[in-house]
Length: 377
Figure 1 (spheres, rainbow, N blue to C red):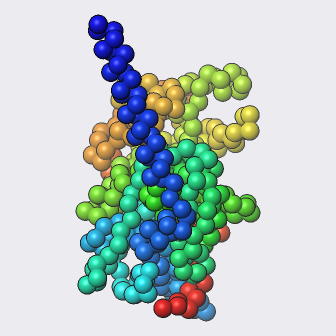
Figure 2 (figure 1 turned 60 degrees about the vertical axis):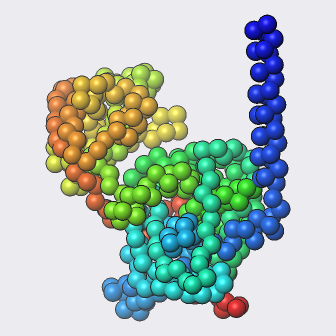
Figure 3 (figure 1 turned 135 degrees about the vertical axis):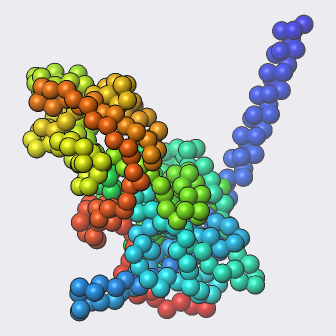
């Protein structure tokens, strides 16, 4: 009897799941025109003024980009590189209404910023934030924004890749980006990447220059995690260790046939960082192994607080658990000698390399310096 009841229960559960799945598919089969009408009212046009005091011939310019309203109180998400370091930020709504905007918080490292605008009497539309962790390669998406100053433009494509790790991003933070072939151009930055349910799954951020239809977006789940800090603190508070590099494992050691140890190879050290003050050594000898470049000659971090650091996952876990004020004890191997250093982690400041000048890297930000075209009201 129990087996019969169990089978019946399982059948009911499967039926419910199939119905829910069918309902979800029907819900997300919105036509593109309907989807555009649903989302575009929440997409805004952003302009800001750049001032270059050291360039008398081009002292002032206009930066334009996109953004998306996320709540009824006037909060707007956009890309940091559209507004960070600029003045006189203004926002134009879908209905043509233009208003000054206040910069609430920004993080150049993740390339996310939050603005706030006054709420007009008619209120504000808002977009729905989705789940970027649920994205799959091949899923259809649209980008809505203001490319090259052209207002409210929709482009269609698919998710070309997920968890793209691009070393060209500041600090090589291993930020997992969304890759899409939906056409995005300068001026799209900060605009939403939207799934067929009409939910924002990413913020368009950059494109790969000299390539066709290779664009990238910040996953919206990453944005959600830092949004409270951006609104409350005005910045993302993160600890500062000050090293970058790669894991050295037995496979690499066997290929090199050098007397090395397992651990994290320190390739570069940020000036003024705790690692620099503690006297860590950075790499000097560039060697390519199976198409991957390593900068050897620096310290190898073999353990942190007594725990071995012999694979990439352990190092990633170590970085994720760090907090400002933590005391860190590193075990280091250098030139055949093992030593230990200990220091307390301060808050990481914004560094010059976090905001690279235009054209200095293969990954180009999507802001535009073109004056916006005449808006039709």
